[in-house]
Length: 278
Image 1 (cartoon, rainbow, N blue to C red):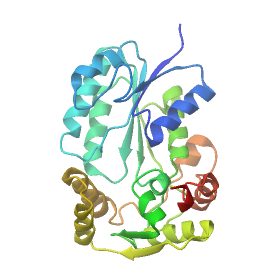
Image 2 (tube, rainbow, N blue to C red; image 1 turned 90 degrees about the horizontal axis):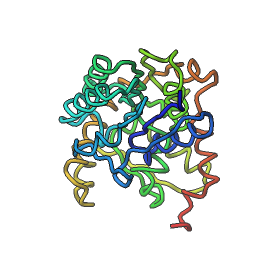
Image 3 (tube, rainbow, N blue to C red; image 1 turned 90 degrees about the vertical axis):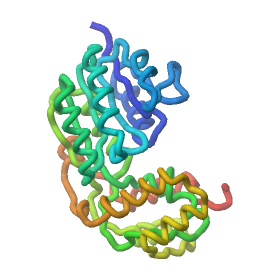
Image 4 (cartoon, rainbow, N blue to C red; image 1 turned 120 degrees about the vertical axis):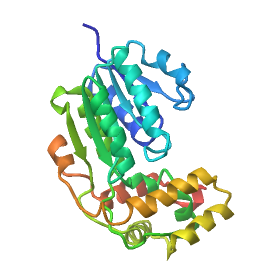
């Protein structure tokens, strides 16, 4: 028997990059990356790129872009899961959206199609503040968002990657659904205030209506499909349905989930929030 062959789709993304690094650190698995820039390239919207990337693969970590909530996601996941299973893939691990009913349709497709599966649900990542949509406003010193007062258990991408890695490597996680959260609830205004305090910067926070936020995004010429997704996340997912904490990270990893304050302290040390570096 050769080494386990694991394919990480979205291997350059927030969780995919970490899963790739962790697999190489803790296992002897052969790790392959699925991305637009990869060789061979992988594109969700182009099924012709799928067969080459899954050839000889044992296990696949699925991160779907832009989000499992988009209307065509379930059809795409059905086609990929069927192709992968027919071509000998033994297990699919799906990153899903916590509290997203559309994502749960995709979960059921994976459960019904894959030989073995694990579902990993998460919602807002800590790293959205340092590697994604909120970084630029933080650097500008002014963050304006809807849903300002809704509590959210922000979850660290390192914790998500660690759970995913466990699921990819060990059969004891087969047919399990894990719902991941951080250890406490914060709203967006509190999260920004914590970043401001630890970095010693003045960062103003402004609460907006969803309509005001969408109009602001249009002023910055954000594409309409991205605005649709933002509207979905802030209206459907950030409505309080995820304002609860689970112990699944501790259950899988045997340690507490990373606290938002620890994330901020670690990230501040990198200098990513220093405006002088921009």
